Amino acid sequence: MSRSLKGMFLFTDIGFVIYWVITYFELIPKAYLYQDYKNSLLVAWNWSFFPLDMFISMTGMISLYMHRKMDDRWRHAALISLILTFCSGLQAIVFWVIRLDFDPAWWIPNLFLLLYPLFFIRSVLSGSKHIGQHGQYELF
Image 1 (cartoon, rainbow, N blue to C red):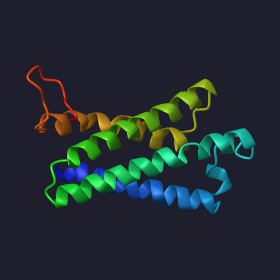
Image 2 (image 1 turned 180 degrees about the horizontal axis):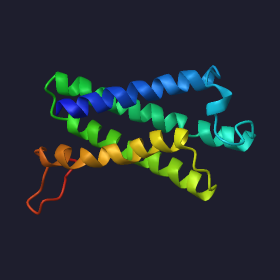
Image 3 (image 1 turned 90 degrees about the vertical axis):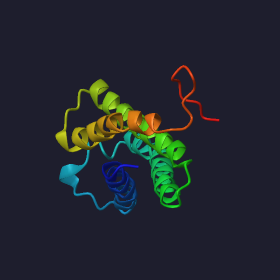
Image 4 (image 1 turned 60 degrees about the vertical axis):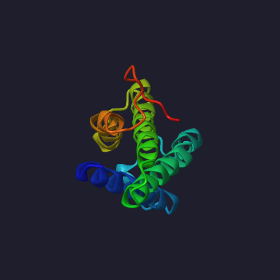
């Protein structure tokens, strides 16, 4: 695992946990809240990301732990974390596009979640012992 991937996992995974603690305790200043933040449907939409984000953090941290223990299965957890991170960012960006809401405070972090995994997925796959004879990735 590259040093940069380790750093991105730590930054993202710890960042998700911090974000959800801050959100739970309503510590985000009102000026930085998204439009219609008090709308119960939007609050539910935001909280619908909680399980996904926690699963992303969990798989990222597991991959770091497994890598440290020299367990080659770290790649599986890393790949899951990267793909789900991409999906989390994509879903949020699509939502903001549909609403025509272009607030940089919400776009920048979600574009980060959408784009950063793309720089690492190939390297996680290419170093795997699970590449089949035709170049496809085999999980098992």
